Image (cartoon, rainbow, N blue to C red; front, top):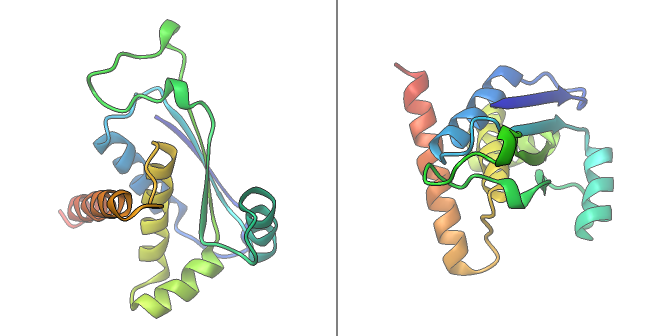
Length: 157
């Protein structure tokens, strides 16, 4: 699994942990091991611009997911690798640590915990999960909580 991370946010972030939680989520979801993912951490100004340009939103958001090649995403162990063994380009996850810090303070946990949650959230969006409808939200957030709990349990061993 190829995961690239770039921290352009100006905030000190444990990028190794962000990579680890993304890798854990992809592994647990049975994503093709040849898959490629990009994670970008940005400042509030750039996140505001992205949110406006791509989502029509006002102000910064916490996470954006940009799927690349939905046709080649391996959603489970029952599917074979793409033809020719070419890697699946999952897409990009964009995180804003400053927004994550504000949300973490409100939620009563650390900024790192919030970034881990947002990373898993972004991975699930890249895999086609959504939370527009109550049933979809329940499914996505239950899965998100399960993935985070299993990742945390591997870190405490």
